[in-house]
Amino acid sequence: MPSNIVTIKAHEDFDYSYMVFGTNTILTKQDRYKQVDGYKAVFQNESDKTMLEEYELYVKHKGKDSLRRFEEKFKADIQATVKDDHPYDRSIPLEIISVFYMSEDRYKTVDIDNLLKTVIDCFKGLIFEDDSQIQNVLGMKRAVQPGFPDAILIGIRKLDKKGTWFSNIHLISITEDGKTTWLV
Image (cartoon, rainbow, N blue to C red):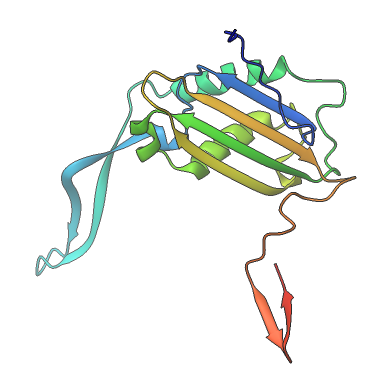
């Protein structure tokens, strides 16, 4: 007989995991402004009216405190998960793996780096002392099917006693005398 209960468990290699399902939209600094389509600001030379510079126009969203309120609530949720060894000491190097599930519309408009920045800033001081401890980051965004909830999944690994998950990723190699050396 099928069960209506689903068990979700974080990977055992993570020293800290945070998962939330049915979350509200993760706001970012990107969400403070919206581009105004069809308009541009043009600066012209007074004497001959030649165009000097052209800019896209943006408007600031009403409710400028929405990002601050989101961050306060998110930090309160994180605070509830803090353990005795938090925040991790500044001397401990870390890596973070994050997956953000969101609506198709949000998926097409939000930048992954802005999502990561918002989340990492909220963890700072609670789970780790400073974001300078982070040596590796993997961020993924995924669109959910209509009717499925948004979700945030984050795993943090301390690298003081174990190697990185990213050690097999190589971007640059040098081949000399038939021998290949991977640099990164």
